[in-house]
Length: 343
Image 1 (cartoon, rainbow, N blue to C red):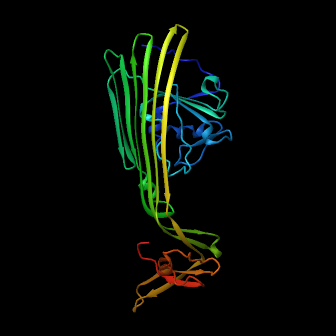
Image 2: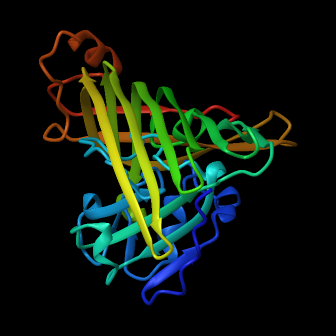
Image 3: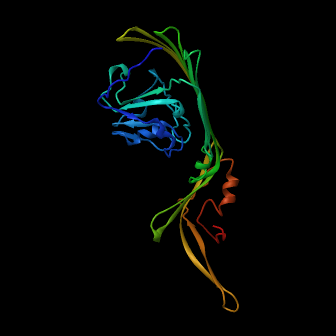
């Protein structure tokens, strides 16, 4: 077995406890959320694993797993469509992060480097997790007198409940799955062979219905409503494999030979069209009482007043849908209704 002596505390390199990823309130549960408190790191949003360091772009950051560079694809659509990131928190033993001034062995990218070490198990162990947003399972073991070791993890994630509570109402069906494994085998006491494999499939399907937003001051409140037709279907499928050969030539010389292959298939289909209306709205309280005057009740009546300049019906085949949802498509319209008692 090749023994790696831990390096001293390098200047500009921060160590992060990977166990914190289990307790971090992140929708995706990735280790990238732990970088939000580091100096110079800016996260894009909580639904994306992308981050920028010191004003750089999100694809200018190096990511290494057991000295193997991870090629992160440039996603045209990043955010709620992105899905799971590469590192599996259940398989990680150590995380180091540098926001600048790192060693030349990491490469020539200028922003940052995230160095992740997967575990080298000494005995059989495993873990399992399940929640309303998905689940995860990982197994690790050492065999043949600890000459053969492996750590394997499978993850499943769905943000259907989370996305359903947003402004855009509709039918969300996001499914994110991945499986990865890391094997090492000691050919001799000074030669070690390793393999890192990953299969990831992120699917995001949504059929939007409508979106309604109120804004403006109290005396001039506005309501913006959009009605959608169509659907969005995106899929990102990734395959990654790497072989590494570590040779302990001398006591102070360790040679590493790494070969990797990467393949990704991205599919994005949008057939969504929308019709919108923007109008002022106000509240009028209507009071009613019983014949004897013993009981009384009041309920708001919402009156929407839409100007013709802001009301538009697009000339699509779904024009009938637009006409049915509005009183008119070429002039001002006034509608009044009472909200249900459960609203």
